[in-house]
Amino acid sequence: MHPVLKTLSILLLAGAGARVVQAAPPADAPLPARQAEIDAIVREISPQRIQAYVEKLAGFGTRHTMSETESDTRGIGAARRWIKAELERCGAGRLDVQFQSHVHPVAPRIPRPTEIVNVVATLPGTQAASKDRYYVVSGHYDSRVTDVMNATADAPGADDDASGTAAVIEMACVMARHTFDASLVFMTVAAEEQGLYGSGDYAAKAKAAGVNIAGMLNNDIIGSAHDEHGKLDNAEVRLFAEGVPPVKETTPALRTLLQTGGENDSITRQLARHVKETGERYVPGFKVNIVYRRDRYLRGGDHSPFLDAGYAAVRFTEPHEDFDHQHQDLRTEHGKRIGDLPEYVDPDYVAQVARVNAASLASLALAPTAPRDVKVRTANLDNGTDLVWAPNTEPDLAGYRIVWRETTAPQWQGAQFVGNVTAYRLDLSKDNLLFGVQAVDKDGNVSPATYPVPAR
Ligand SMILES: [Zn+2]
Image (cartoon, rainbow, N blue to C red; front, side):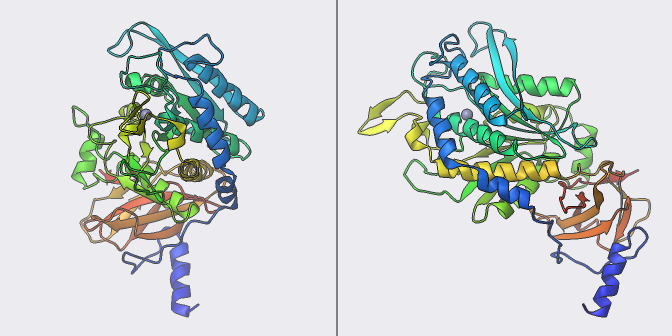
């Protein structure tokens, strides 16, 4: 190493008080360490098992929320008992599998009080400082046909959303054989089609109990890479990620985001950045295409109640929806088969999306929590950036990494590891750049970034 560079890196690693840096974006950012365990998880995700799960779920005839619950072969009751049994079997004692239910009163799409049951499998974290931090991944196992109130017609719901349900079951079974610092919740929910009532109940109860859900990934319609004209696009997935939430009143947190040009730095966008960076690193050749919206145009999904509860939550969906193969009565029209049938689901594609999910969840649950109380000091007007934050409590913490980007850039462009300190000054202008602070553990696992708010 050139002596000047060596001196500079010593200064950079010296921590608080060290004067830094001539760096400007894009800098030569040190990448987080690649984890062999995450590579192993990605390899273990099986398209064959995913295909078997999709076919099994479609085989219950209908999984409509108001369908039959007594039969062992048909209807939503049989479907959820099978999902629970499968998770118990493959979890081999490591997954805590529960039904979580509520009786939903009559609503526009609920004609009579109906028990709505989620199947929730928890893999407890193994680090005391992290086990109360949860990451939730979900798919909905209910299905529908053209008439959303039709609870008896065959509704195979293969793409919408046996694909997401199968991905969640596969991830649970694979990841239960690994250990993580933080806790993972693998959830399949009901009543998505009737009004998001399964995920809504879970999110509301979590919020009321003060559960620390540090990120939620919803998988809904991830089964097909063909559009309605047959065009194949199997090397990408859409990731819907809200920026500013559509609240009626401006909250103080929202006002701070807007005042500081942080519309693109909500906790959900930080989660989306982390998922894109991690997913694309561990699933080469597959693109995570972030869409700056809560969901598809004016639509919603099971992540919406989590967003409304104040959690970071995103939605995975295939690149193009084929509306002939979702929410449709099974029939043939002009020689074309209409309906959400398993033959239109590509298990290799679902497996790729599941790998992106699993790599992201593993990375999040191995890493420390994102730093808290990150602030930028504003007492003096100058062209540098003084950041301060609260110390993390994980025993394996190595230190912190400051990341930055231009205000028009979507992903981080520069990064600098600053050691185990709780304050740092960069000679980079807060007027021109956006900053974030990440926590890094001794194995090189990196948290999502926290956006600094002004210290007042
Ligand atoms: Zn759906």
